[in-house]
Length: 228
Image 1: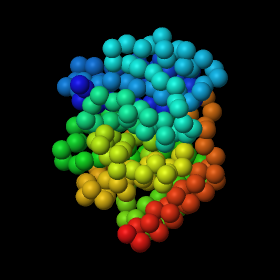
Image 2: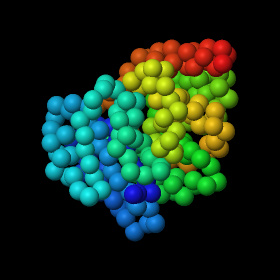
Image 3: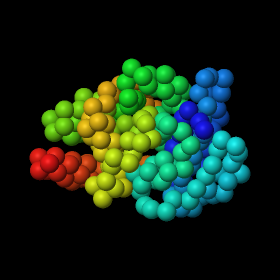
């Protein structure tokens, strides 16, 4: 049994894997946190999965994804977790693994911890769309003041089972998690991080496609809440 399972969806991320594992290990080894690392690979074509299999150890395990999309990859990863708490993080190192110990230590004063992205060099269009997204889908519709799009979150494993997977699309797990936490009466905490530019691989997300998915899902959640 571990304190924490770190769930990492991958797809064509071979260039970042060594650095990611090294930074995770350096951040967590020597702390009070016993941890496992769980990779869920979405049919990579660049040798990522074969590389992950070579890294498998007592606390590193890798699995081929059964369903499509990052959201379902995280849910599959939680199914392999041997811990009370789980942390989801992207493999591209835009989110710093070094933030995870601080996030874990916040559990107790809050129930779910979100990494709040601080971006200094972000392009104007992306920054503007992100602010609009946060205001409409977070504050206005659901009263959520945290960074709802953040891909680095730490939460109780049991929270994932409050989510109806038919309610989410491949890229919209974040809002579902936060709404499930709110329904439980959870206190949501935040840790500020430096959100880095992508150094490895290519983004799997289209800005406008992602906004469309979030809009569709948010409206479904809102209508469902009004009916209940």
